[in-house]
Length: 131
Image (cartoon, rainbow, N blue to C red):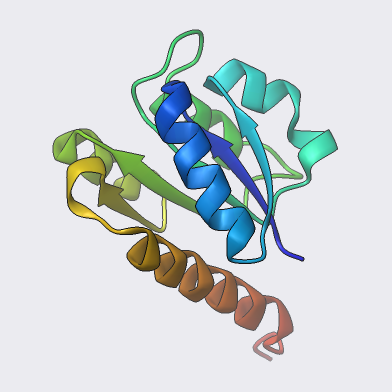
């Protein structure tokens, strides 16, 4: 069962997304902010991170920069879920695989994006290195 870490400060939205992803067969570890997510990375061992950008303690862009600089977790795919398209586009330039706007996506669309990102990540792992 693929492991997902969900970082979202809005408890209602966090529960909605976590429930939908669990029903789709994912093991979801949720945290209310970037710092709590960072503190639980080793425990959660995510294969993908769903990341809000506007959070207390450690915002999403700070989390993403710290993640990308980390030796162990730097290559974990990140899908941003944000209300702010400008900030989400910045996140993509800093290493996120993509983004969805909170007011404009459906749970099936989220699940499709997660599946596609996880498949791409798995393909990169199994692809032989260039000679």
